[in-house]
Each structure stands twice: as C-alpha cells, then as structure tokens.
Length: 288
Image (tube, rainbow, N blue to C red):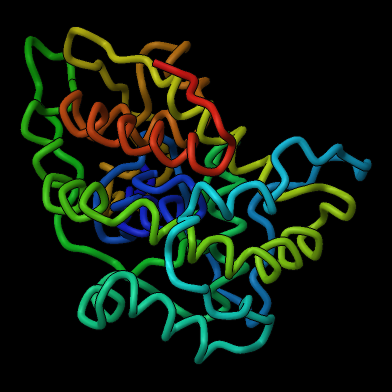
C-alpha cells in the first residue's frame, strides 16, 4: 500500500487542496492498499507517474485572478509572484508559512513545483507514486488486524495520522492560498511541461478537491486482501501488497483510497479543511 505522507496534504493545502490531501505516506511505512514495486531513483526532472491525457485546450473555469480578493483583500500587499528556477525564494516562502522545522522535517524541496503538480494530478488517478511526492519519509507502517481468518484495517491505524492532521488543519487557509497564488505561475508552467499544454492547473486542483470530498465513509471495518506473489524468494515486506477486498473500494482514485485508511475522524477534519480551501480558490462549496 502506498504511504500517505504529510505533504500530500501540505502540497494540497498550498494548492488549495490544503489538508490532503498530506498526505502522510512514506516508503518505509505500510501498504498503500495497492500493490507496488520498487521504484527507480528520482531523476533530475520529475516525470509524470501516469500517462497524460490527450492534449486539448481547456477552458479557464476557475481563473487564478479571482482568488486574490478571497485570499486576503484587506491584507498587506503581497510579494511578487515566484518564478521558475528560484528555489531559494520558494523555500523561503514555504518556511514563512510552515516554519523552518516543519519544512526540514516534512518536505523534499528538490524539483518542488514538479513534485507538487504530479502529486496533485495523480491523486485523481489510479496510482500516486510516492517517489514523486515532495515529502520526507516517516516512521511506522500500515496496521492490519485479523479476525476469523479475515484481515481488516486496524482501528488504531488512523492514529498514525493524528499529528499530521492537527498540523495540516491548523495551517492558516488565507496564508496558504496567498502563497498558492504567488506560486501559481511556476505551478502552471510545470503542469504544462508535464504533458498538459493548454490545460489550466487550478481547474485540476478544484477537480481533485471535489473528488476527495466525495470519498465514501464506511461504517464498518474495511476488509483487505493480500495479493499472491509466486516465486522461491520470500517477500520481505508483504504488507505492501494489500488491496481493498471490496472491488468498488479498490477501484477508487488513489486520493480517496488514501483518505479511507486515515480513519473517519481524520477524514472528516480534512474534508472540512478542503471545503474551506475550495471556497477560497473556486468561490463555492461542494461535496459531503
């Protein structure tokens, strides 16, 4: 199972996804509820984890210019937009929002804009490769409990995300969206370079938020199944091969499957944050 890392929510918070969307996955952590294989080292230019959709022009449904009044009309004048390649300015802006210790602990600032764009886009797809996340690994692994020969997500598994959820939901939404506006030229450029010329990144951000808000909230423990791997070599980390036993849950986008294993309380807190962020970047609220 892929590991739900802190930035996945921080990246999404700053993108207007705010909360998720971290994302508190980690490579040592536990199963991401989808089978995975070892990934090659990250290249200097971060590639897309999924094949891009056919290139086509898309309308600007959620113009970035409309965000500015919502992000702080009465606030002091904002610094100038960030530019591609100015890694020091991006790091400084992130530090001002999150704090130096948080940035050093949680984030991988290398190729940051590309990582953020790839992560946001892939949350709405089948698989969100952890090697593309702008996040540092975290300890602990996915918790499973067995009852009468059937395996389920352990009730205490969501506790692994409590600290991150508190951190993500405490981020000032107005300040996060203001930083998103400053970063937008860089993010838009990265989005187009990753296979989406003519597409508008803020539209994709809103689309992914809407998808996350529709994440189901099962009232019973979620059953798992372990994919079988044939061969003479024993699997050192078998927990990485768990899937949702319910085909309907297994077929969900990666972002929804991530929220499912965070527990109902954490999911509810993140959805509240996402609604607030969506209202600020799109001007309306939707979802559950």
